[in-house]
Image (cartoon, rainbow, N blue to C red):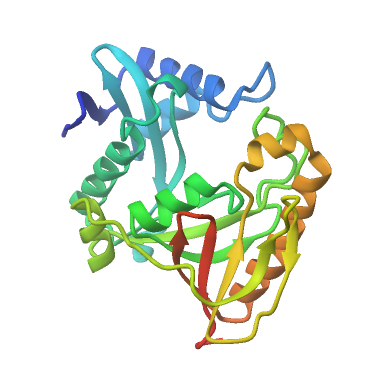
Length: 266
């Protein structure tokens, strides 16, 4: 099973040398620097033997992206996508999108109805990719989900995550996979805004629709101003996490940096 997009071929990984290359790719993306790698080739070998999802994106012979996942108990009909990453030099070529389209096709062929995964809610580009470009739904806020992480991207902060559900046959997913992303407008009461200095400012959570901002570049902020990055972490956890816990629903993400949240069911 292959998928070609922008001269990129996505296919399952089966050879051990490819699995070693996947480990090395992930180490370079997350900059493990001798710490525990995000995944090992030995684990990937076991996953392929067990029938889990392990796929890579190739530009010619070069592995430039990879995505892995494992299945939930049979009754759930769900694939949990654990790690996906694209080499820095290949970003902007829709490699991640090609990987997710391939993963969706694989899930459908296995009779699965849903793909889930987590992402850092502070990373704007990932929020836009997951909620808009793929049409997935944010379903649960998970404080410090992975505990202390030691890679260069996540080190020094708590690992809060948003859990997303991608119902692979939903109208939103079908449209997004046909190149029609889910678009929402940042209109509503500001529950969490941004000050002129780039810090979080709490607003009001009243009204049927509220907006929750995230910083423009949290990864850079962790390096230049760790205290501000921590302030953002706690503010988004309190506001967005609190809204989801009360029964509110994220309806989408405006690319200018806002989660749009519907409170009508809370």
